[in-house]
Length: 192
Image (cartoon, rainbow, N blue to C red; front, top):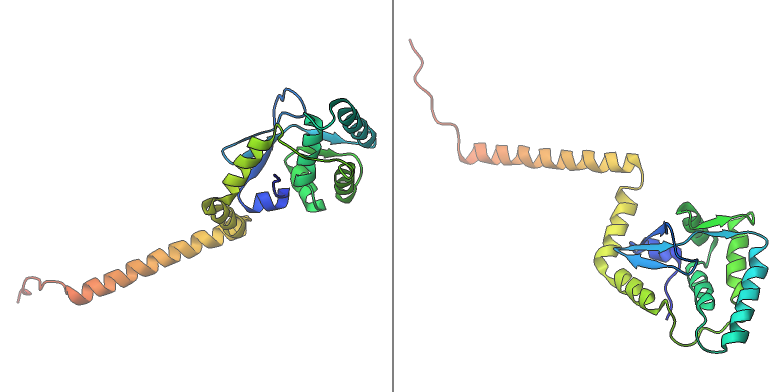
């Protein structure tokens, strides 16, 4: 089971947030449309550390419980393009010390190259919840509305102005129709 990339998740209405006070780096949670992930600092030393941890897990546990391997697979699912890295950097989940977003993308995608991801894992329930959340049409439409109509102050002001103009047009039309069908009653006769 996999989840879409950060870009796709964002487009489908899911938000990302840095997890405050995580128990450990593997402490990922999802609630109310927010995926909370502990901060990850990616430096030149991260690649050999990840490679060694993956090798240790594979030599010690074989095909059974490999939580760090699942964590790296989770990152690999989230990051497919430099734009995915940018989204995670803006949410302060990834701190990039490699230089460019392309380098981080290559690092995350290459570190999982020779790793198998069979079987159940500790993130399986989270994957199910995320996929269920993004599968609901309401969340997609809400995200699209926010992206299209509230992405900048100018767009928001334009939408509000257009809404006010539309309401005033309806009021004007109602008053005109009302006056046509119910003309005002004749008043008292003028005094000579």
